[in-house]
Image 1: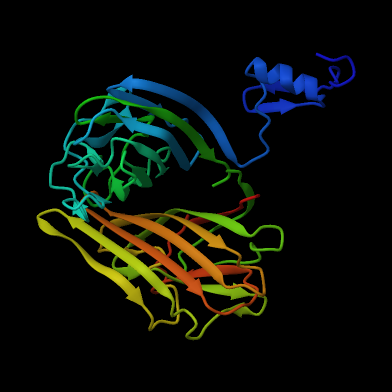
Image 2: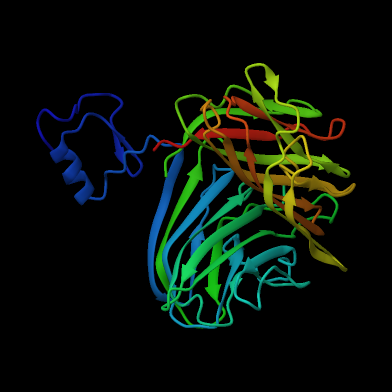
Length: 218
Length: 179
């Protein structure tokens, strides 16, 4: 660290992921970035985690406690095969929830055979998009907002939206909304918090990047 | 993307209207709004109006609402998208937070983007999506894209419903999106 660029005797200096306090020179910042410690963030959209994934059959994305709203941004999301379907399930107490409690969700994508689809009853996963052609092989970016995962008194909701392009330049847009039907009686459900969400393709693998944010003070 | 928290408003009791005032300023052109834990029991619509320094904006300038999409899935059938189109006959932002469905516990979450509301020489644009769960037996979704075709300075908004159908704990959080 430079001698004058940082004030080491401050009682309030903190230096950790997402929390850099102090006065830094450009060289300090450069050095800290190389060390993976420079994440000065004065935003109320708090970066909680980042993950690259390559040629995996599934991935689990944590939803850290303390936030009513989580935002997941996927970039360079690339299924390696055509004719496949992206699904999601929640994780509670370390277990992927596979029971048929995802019946109430909708998804839409503009593949000609899948416009405005609604989930069937007793569905064991949320379908985020479902392509029956080559339309999603070269996917682009999409985002999902999950609301209420950290709240034991409400049914959590999520919504998502994205766009992709295939090798020929044709685009596919998709979006949807969902809830997780779990807990107590049907009229006034109770539940435990959802600690993560698990994504998987119906066949073949996926690659990409995902960043998870928490919305502060919401 | 960056977000700066501007204000949060929480219903302290069961109310018919919940106003979020003085949240749009000259500092930002883009705002993100999160609606959490809108609780209700019974059937109710949740519409909205914009506000300015004089109060709520009424009148027929709410006639540019396009690509509204409503989805409704329930057990035992009744699934369908029953509206997908354009509204030009209203004096409020229709289905801003969707609707409560019946006497079961309804909870609603929503996410909204407002563009250029405070800029007096520009129209105000909004996109939003709300999701309702009714107990654990039904899902209702509402997506509204809206333009307020009157160049004026908008400072906030308010949600309205049937008598006292906005229950205690309903919370709006407003963020500026720095560029």
